[in-house]
Image (cartoon, rainbow, N blue to C red):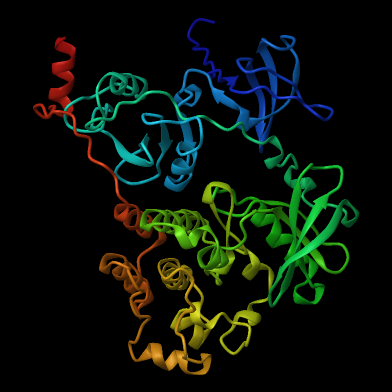
Length: 478
C-alpha cells in the first residue's frame, strides 16, 4: 500500500438521554446512557446499532427517535443544554415547580451577534444573558472572564455570580420528549389511504379549506389536524407536486406536515395539532392577552425565524396574519398555511378576488396581483401590529374598496396603544411603498431580537483580553 493514504470517515456515536420503550416492530427499546452508532440518519427516526448497553443487548439494530439522543462528546450531552428554545419557552420551563433561584439552562441562538443564551431563574422572574464568542473562539459573558468551552463557563458561574446576588445552582428540569411528535414516513410513503384517517370536531373553516381534529388509525397515538380542500380548487397533479415540496420544509416555527390524501374528494393534508389555537384568539382572549412586552417580542421573533426559513427556500406565503399562526405548548409559534398559495390556483389570489386578505396585503399585490417575498414582509408588519395591539382588526372603519387609495396616499396604520416608537418604526419599514426598500426577514430577525432585553453580566471588570494573534501568543506563554 506504499504511496497510498487510507482515508477514514469520522465515526459519530450517540448517547440516549432518556429511557424509551419501543411499541412497534423495528423500534428499539433502550435505557438512558445506552450508546449507539447511526446506520442511517433519515428523518426523525434513525436506524442504529447499539454499541454499549445499560438496558438491552449490545449489537442490536433498530429504529430510535432521534430527539432522545445526543452526539457523544458534544454540548448536547449536558443536562443544562436545551438546544433551540425561545425566550418564552425558557421562561415557562424555568418557572415550573422544582426549579428555584439559580436554576438555569443554555439555549441555542441563530442571532447575528451571539450563538447561545444563558437563562437563569431569580425568584419569580428569569434573566437572560448573551453568551458571546471572541475571535479566537473563547466564550464569555463579559470582558472579564473567557473560557475555551461552555462547560468551563458554566462551571465558573457555579462559583462566581453571573450578576449581583445570582449564582448558577442546578440545571432546569428537562421534560422528556415525545416520540409520537415525530413522523416515521419517508417521502415515498407521504401519500396515505383515506381510510387511515378519522375526522372529529371541526376546528375552523376558510375560503378554500375546512380544518378538523382527527385521528390517524394505526399510525400514531395522538390527535392530528386534518385540512380538507375541495377537489375543484386545484387539480391532483398540482396538489401532489406542491405538497411533496412542502413535505421537505422543516423548521420548528412551521406547522409540521405528516401526510396527504389526494385520492377522492376532498383532498386531505394531515398536520400536527397545536392545542392553544391560533395567535389571533390567543392574543384577544387567551394567555397572550396577559403577555408582557418580552413575551410579545418573542412571538414576533419566532414568526420572523419561520419566515426567514421560507424566504431562504423562496417560498411565498401570501396570507401571513395572526389567524394563520398557531400556538403550542410553552407558547411555541408555528406558521400555518404556508403552502396553501402554492396549492390553490393563482387567480384565486388576484386582487379582483373577494377572497383576498385585503388588510394584510401589500399595495402592489392589491393593485397588480404581484406577490413576492417583500409582499410577505408588508403582511408581517400588519401581523406585528396585531401582536402589539393584542388582536385589534387593522384599518377599523375603512372598507376594502377604499383601502388601496388610502395606502397610495401614504397613510398607514397608527401606532398601537403602549407600543414603543422603535417597534412602530419596524412596522413602518415593512410598509414602505417601494417593495425593494422593505427589509428582508433575515434583517427583521436581527432587528426584533435586538429589541428584546438581555441582562449585562456584572462580574468585576478586568483588562480586556487581547484578540487574535496576540491572544494566542499570551495563552501559549502559559
